[in-house]
Length: 609
Image (tube, rainbow, N blue to C red):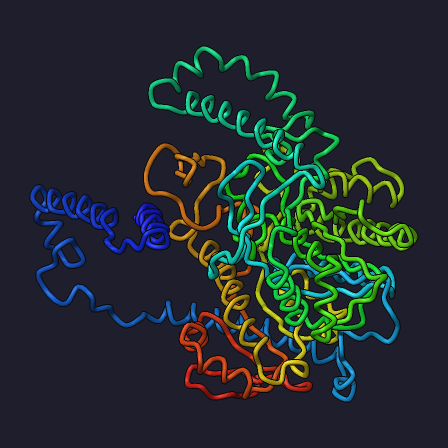
């Protein structure tokens, strides 16, 4: 019962972090229950229990495994061959895109002319598609890829709350807290917090009444029919099945002003965070007039697995708070003065704008633009046009992946390519608002590679929305400090994501969560399939299959790092966890030197890829 055991193990992990508890009483209790069932079964059916492979076999070591049969070896051979074919295709694309003699001039932070817009995206595979289309819109655009928490391991305290979500990878613990507030109005913040607490207490009491064992049946019998009007309006898109909690207690006109209070942090800490972010990103000079810090989120309704579509680098939450904190730090005059003393001179006319990429609709929303200097109005208008054009192109590309039915339905009876495109995009947007839609988007399905390199080496290459892209210039990191951070954090997290999709695709019954249509949310902590059994783990079948074929091709992650083999090897030798991933075959590690690729074997050798 992997689901219940994992949930109980998670409870122990949380308790250990909180008070140092180390006794795994809950998992031991679950094991005792299972053993009691086994013992009872053995007493009633001894012939089953004592048979080879039974509960209590009488012969042989129960831990011995027979060697794999030819059929298993054949399937593994096909698995490896498919992974090799994918790696060769990607390596060929990358090698063809960059001539070896052009590599010395590939400084992504110092373009030949000053850009109008620089925008930092998360390394998420969905960003690869948007970045490619955005760069094609205008030469004044430069994009970067960086882990979506932007180097800010924060705990966000929602308005009126004492605790909040950890906006960082699960590998890390939050290093500081940031509270939400109504910008520039402490009195409004206090009033809104009070209203929000009262609203949520009322909703919680109502939810408990709806779901408790003693009242749930009477609730359905007495009030079930009253929900018919809301079901109709939800189906027509006029209302939402689940209200957005972000606006609770804040008037409609003030919701845009609800933002994290960055100024509450000490100046020294703010400067360290800002310097670390820019250094690890490789952006210490050549700033554009507008620099957007773009997190990502997935807006959909009626999906218990929504966290799997949000930002993994933010712990399964929206990256919007991190983007707002990052922009607030970098616009702070005191922080800029201190950064100049550390050799990072941000021009006075550079302004950092937080943004969020909505992956279900491929819209990029610019946030907190009320503070943008008046002299940037012309550039802002151009940026909005570029983002809209890139979003349109991205939606059209994604429509093909969502299925021919989407395109055919939206374009039925339409004359003219422009109107057909408009109908197609409307159909893509509608999916995010449909409470009955089992595939609002494909999420990270198809992910197969993690490329750590300057953008100049991947720009213009169509990687099909299958690659995590992290900007990195080894020439700026001779000591390998940034490379070590990338290989021990983003690389590990991307391997987890890849293996989650891999396992859910190859054996959804054991490692996935089955049919989404019969999911039942249980206790607000897990999902059951139907009305009982084990807690489900992994992804639903609809997340990796279109009903007829696999949409996620199950390949183990190929990690391509543009750095000398010696630098990569030092990190592998230093960190046992990284070595385990590579040497046990969970990822394939390649070093990209010039126009050549070298693969690290389990024995520690580097061979031409």
